[in-house]
Structure formats: C-alpha cells, structure tokens
Length: 352
Image (cartoon, rainbow, N blue to C red; front, side, top):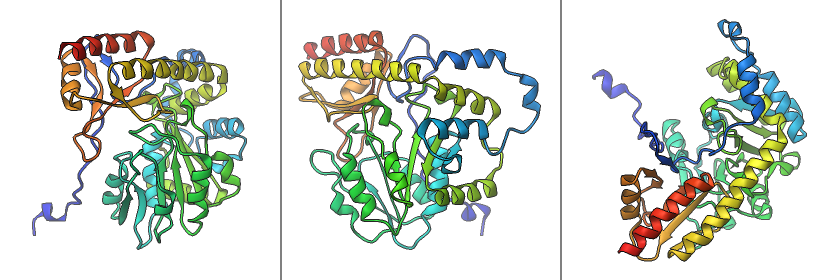
C-alpha cells in the first residue's frame, strides 16, 4: 500500500476570489466596505510589539471579557476562535459525534458539508421551500445535531425567532448551532434563548459587521457546559489559537458600539436602496437581511452577467450549483461602489 492510499481525502471549500488587481470593485466575499472602529487603528499604533515574542493568553481573557460584558453573559459562556470558521469547525468536531446524520439546509453555507466530510460525520440536507425558507418540520426527524445560518447564506433570508426556537425545542437531545454571521444587518439574534436551552450554540463573527476579516476573529455563546466541552477540544488541539493583536484589537472593536451601529446602519440603508434599483432593472431576489443581495435576472443568465461584471473589474459571487445557478450574490459595498455596479448593469441590460 502506498502512502497516498493512507491520505485523508476531502473536497475542499472554495473561498471567494481574492484578486490582487488595484482599482477593482470587490463585492464577492461579504467583507465590510468601511474601516474598523477608530480605536482599533489607535491601539494598533500604540501596541507593544515587543510582546509578540511571548505566547498570547491562551484563554483570550481580554476579548472574552469584553464580549461577555457586551452581550450580558458570563465569561464562561463565551468561546473565541480564529474566525467563525474555526469556531464552527471545532464545534463540528466537539458536538457532532453520534451515529445519526446531522441536519442542515440544502442551500446554505458551503463549508458545512466540507467539515462533515473531513470529520467523517454523517449528514443529511433538508430542502428549503420554494421561497427559500427553512421548513421546521424537516428538523423533527432523528439526528446527530442541527446547524443552520440565520440569516441564511447565500439567500440572505431571515427566519423568525419563533421558527428558530421551534427547531431548538424539537431537538433538545442534540446540539443545535445557529450561525449568525450576518445577524447584525437587520436580523434577530437567538442569543436570548441560550439561557433557556443548554443545547444551543450561537456563533458570530467580526469579519462582516465589525470590519475585521483580516484579523480572523469569531466567537460563540452558549451554556457553560457547552463552552467547557469546546475548550477541552481547543486545548487538546492548539492552546494558542488567537494571536495577541487580534485579542487586543478585537476587544477595542467591541467597546465602540456607536461606530458599530453607525456602520451597520449605513450598509442597511445602501442595501435597501440597491434592492429598489435592481428590481427596476429586472432582477428579483429574496428579501435579504444580510450584507449581500442574492439576485437573479428575469431574462439574462446569471453566469453571463457574472462574467461581464468580472471583465469590468467588478467581482461578485456565482455558483454553478443546483437550485442557485441563476443567482449571483452581490456584497453591499459603499454607495460609490454600488453606483458603479448599477451603472454597469443599466448599460449592460439595456444593450441586450
């Protein structure tokens, strides 16, 4: 037997393109178009770089304490990781270990099936309905755990807190993970349910609404028991997962609530304006409550528009996959970026 026959093989997650060209409009990976809170740059300039010769605090106490204070929970209910992908991956490894399949939607974040394959976790997808919503009754079957984003990606649709609780209540013998990467753009968080259900884990990220994708900060909040189990796995995997600058600058970002609310409000306002203008151009889309719009044109194939935009150095996201191949996901950028997108689409649509 060759060494290659012993390799664990998986089909990896394909991230959005990160073009290195200048003067492009990058609307393909849902990054925040605005800079982080002002205090982040100030603290970065004042940072004691001599401290980088030492290992960072393995408990990430400064960031954990800031998050606990902001969300009104105990520090022992907070876990942080290197982006929400790290948190979710560790949660898959920690909580999805039964023989029954875990459940998640058929149109959703495309990392879920990758982690399931990587960790040899059986899984089953539950089809969204014709309006892209979750059917709670699909999650009343035997399972080894449940995960879904809210708002969903790539559709941007928000499920009501009642729907979320219905799914949690029906699955109290398994861990339910609600992935809230986009909740700050008009969603309603499931965090209040953490005190009611000890099997609920709510995951969020600094990459979108806090404009810190480059520092890789994610976190989750749950019962002390859930967080304890997560920490056991983390410390069996890598004690020093988060670097010192991320801990310090992340805590500062949490403290500036005024900047956070102002920035998310600007993105929401731009999103709603662009929805109206896209509709006038013949696009349709679910009613996004995220920082992106999942749009299909009434007569022009999505892949054709995607390629035309790319030729014009405007990058959006496209997947040639069942059910979504006629849709593009368009990140909400600044007003200036969205105006350039709309100007191009007006000219392109009217030229055909």
